[in-house]
Amino acid sequence: MLLALSPSAEQAVERLLFAEQAPLSLVASALEAAELERLAAEHEPEAVFLSPDLPGLSAACCTRLRSEGRLLVGLALDDPSASALAAFGVDTIVGPEIDRERLRTAITGGISGGAPPGDPAEVRSESDPLARRSGAPEGTILSVVGGRGAPGASECAASLAALASERWPTALVECDLLGGGLDLRLAADGHDGSLLGLVRACAAGDGALGELLERWLVRRPGWPPVLLAPPEPSEPLDDLARPGAIATALRALAAAVPLVVCDVGFLLEEAGETTPVARCHREALASASAVLLVIGARDRQVRDGLAQLDVLRVELEIPNERLRIVSAGLGGSGTGSHRSITAMLTEQLAERGLALDASLPFDGRALLRAERRALPLAAARRRSAYARALRGLIDQLFLPSVVAKARERKLRLPLPQPTQPREQEMSLP
Image (cartoon, rainbow, N blue to C red; front, top):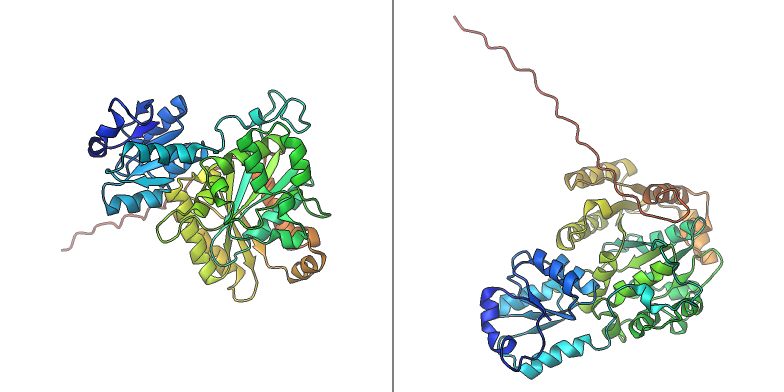
């Protein structure tokens, strides 16, 4: 276990940690969040015992630690501390009155059965046909997320993956644990294989991951290979929400498939608390090479999309270089004009140092054809304005190579403000 406690918090539980019969072995102690992440990478502890008042500690730091398979146990000295730990998304919250056995049970219970940290290639044998070749680069993970109010993020992820599969081997992963309904569109049964199976296979160190993927991936004409979400995500939530479970599964899939497109649910927090579902969604975003945010064109969707953007940038600390912004549904019912929405979004994004990467128009003909043929929008009408806009986005997202690699965002330099000519002073008589 790695300690990340403030002096006051450490003093409150020093009887447990430094006694002769301490419940767990301590590998190091961090005095601030930056040192915490460095020590975690160096010592690879199974658990981190932290307090919310550690200097520099944030929700993003906790998400990165969990994505590497570290169990987070928070020490709350009072109610505000407990609320802060819940917002950070720790796995377990304990009080200073906890005894040795309860602390040992809280930590070892969360560790047992979790996804093993480390290289996901270790869970595949040399005979695996999809095993990564020695020295070959890993694939790219693109996470697509939206705000509340159905802005079209799931459709954008499906259409983008369908178009990208024409250039590179691509897999679409349904990481929306709120019930995306992709199994209904594909007329498939998630019990035959889903993200849950991949998570459990990685946790068990299964050596035939490639063979299992061939059985779990759903293949339909006009669709990329799809890995569905569990049929009832609330039932196996304990397996999915374990530290590092989602991240390890996505990395293992990206080691076998050059491009992985993740459809991530919009829920990243709820009433100031990071729920298990939100922890899974955050982990999928933290492990992505790039994050694509889809903002709807209606007024409420724009407000929710900008609020989601602030969560991504401020709470999860996703840098602007990894963020891409798309406006969807332009020209649909209940939306303003294309020019006014684009101008408003451009101004709002410029204040955050970002730019609009693409505008996806509403296409009624493609929607009717997609519903009739059960296809993604871009595959239902390949020459539509929606498909052309997505192809342009793909050209901006990835480097022009055999293997899809995410581009780094080009920083736009601000233009200097024109100086006003100084008025000449005239002496009055």
